[in-house]
Length: 248
Ligand SMILES: *[C@@H]1O[C@H](CO)[C@@H](O)[C@H](O)[C@H]1NC(C)=O
Ligand SMILES: *[C@@H]1O[C@H](CO)[C@@H](O)[C@H](O)[C@H]1NC(C)=O
Ligand SMILES: *[C@@H]1O[C@H](CO)[C@@H](O)[C@H](O)[C@H]1NC(C)=O
Ligand SMILES: *[C@@H]1O[C@H](CO)[C@@H](O)[C@H](O)[C@H]1NC(C)=O
Image 1 (cartoon, rainbow, N blue to C red):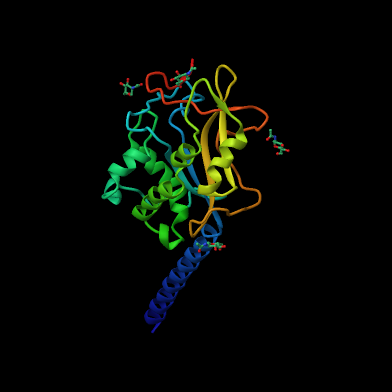
Image 2: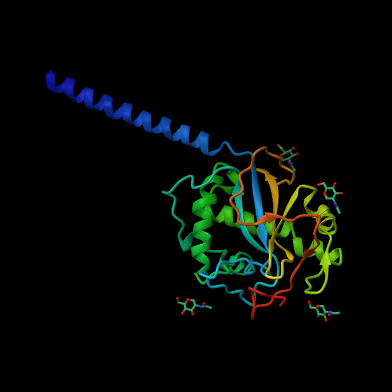
């Protein structure tokens, strides 16, 4: 009788522990799914290395001849789950497209970059059904690159990379409005000659991928600064031979 009581108690505790884990998982899910907006971030290979610290090797592959993906970042949240590892086989159908449109410019494998992005941001995106697996997450980013096509928007407005011509910030902004609305965020770096150089562009999206999601107090961990409209903006051409100083 005592035996049976003990077994029942243990079973009960196991059940309770199980319920608690489920409940914690629910809480976690709730916390991680609290984001409303996400940033789709693209970078310009022509100026990525301009402000890169000397301890990093900088390599711009020949195939990177257009704006590339930096990441898809749910706002104000990071590193949601260290247990969800990314493996190359998770991206089975995508590596060629990813290698072309989401390359790394550091001397590491692209997979290392993708894994870091997945760990930091992708694991937080999974509470949206359209992003609920690595292949969906990376596939969505590729689709967003086509949808929010910076190369096309600039070309249509006659904005071309150049060492000897700079642009008003407003000219760049207006060129982007037809593609991504008014809420784009242009980021710049300053080169050795104190020129303001366009390097990265963010557009804030709702979880249904529409642009224009606004959120207060968004944290920004990026080393780049918003481009200032008092100074003209350079859009440097690609220079694979001298990526740190493309326009000497
Ligand atoms: C990349 O790293 C490898 C191994 O660490 C090194 O041999 C090579 O010189 C590096 N390439 C560049 C361009 O820095
Ligand atoms: C301006 O720079 C481009 C390359 O960015 C070059 O092809 C062109 O010849 C330059 N024009 C002048 C007037 O220097
Ligand atoms: C996307 O979601 C936002 C906010 O919920 C909504 O205003 C917008 O109409 C949606 N867009 C589409 C295309 O469904
Ligand atoms: C720069 O931005 C400020 C407000 O942010 C605006 O009042 C001003 O007209 C802008 N200047 C130019 C040259 O666009």
